[in-house]
Image (cartoon, rainbow, N blue to C red; front, side, top):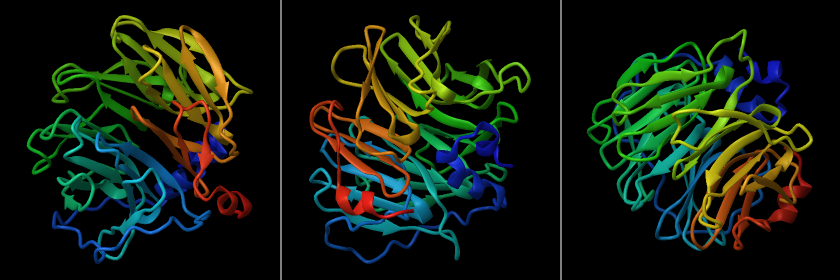
Length: 347
């Protein structure tokens, strides 16, 4: 299965190639052996490495996950990094998403073959948790609080925990890939995926229902990301396709935010201005949506951006071919960490 080629999305091809070779397996549920403690070092040029997820904690620590089980943390906005690499058995599985509690004390990272990692010390160390059989590759994780979290898979499975990850339950919402999940409060969770699917939970992840989309014939294109700012919701996807909600997700109105027909792979609400969203994706395209107006932003990269995170003090974007970008002015301007080395080398 390579739906990336069907859609013509070159930026997602590495992830989908992994799915084609995916074999479902039960996890051991034992602690993952991390490398020996390392001193933070300057990030070396790694243009062959892809990063798929990023989170910024209240302390200012940024956590990045990506290729072959890599987890990187920085406490000084990318000047130096501490790297760890995790595997199941003999295999290093890609990690696609990372999310933390509001206070940043605990979080999860998820990836290939049901890989679930849990941290209770702000990303310094991680423990492997056991995913239910049939979970598939977990593409996205959403955290409600220290006990409750859910992850969505490439085959319509959603796995959830209510006890900090000691146990995970599995439910199916259809034969469709889920690319993004979020909790907007303790009860309400939202997700998007293939065939313009929008899924919703109103009970903290105990049950999920397909709210709209999901029809392979009528709604062929995917949504890749969803975000909320108060009652305003935004989902974005292929070639700038989008839907918006102004009533907390009860209803959605189709829209289009196409910039040269580029696809948006990430969407987040941003601190200022109030009610605004930030989007990024294919070929380094990025834009801010505020007051119904879309403003394109130059990221100085042509690499696909897979994820973006904002804090009150800085923002970070990550993506393919070693893309690590940082902004200190709310996403209006970006610069690459070691950008000369990253930009001058091919994948």
